[in-house]
Image (tube, rainbow, N blue to C red):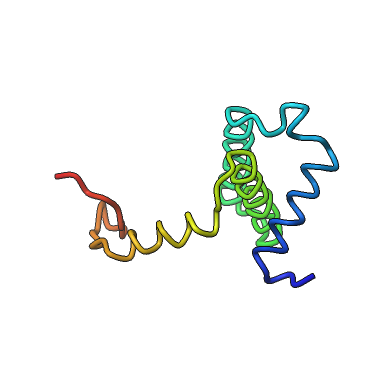
Length: 109
């Protein structure tokens, strides 16, 4: 296994879903997955707000990343392709300072 390979990460998450029968037991239901991702984002926020360690933050980010990969599995789309398509779009956008912080977004004036 190549720990830097997205394909190996995807295969590992697919095996985890199969082992726990996520598809048959509601673990791949999209509204449920969104709720889990919101929960993880809250835990990331708590790490930052409480000044927790970089290791704690990394663990919570990994939880969210695993959920994102699993959501792509559940919704049957290629996350790697979606990432590169979105990056191409984002890279073509202009950046703006909003309240003193940089934003690269689709601004609708």
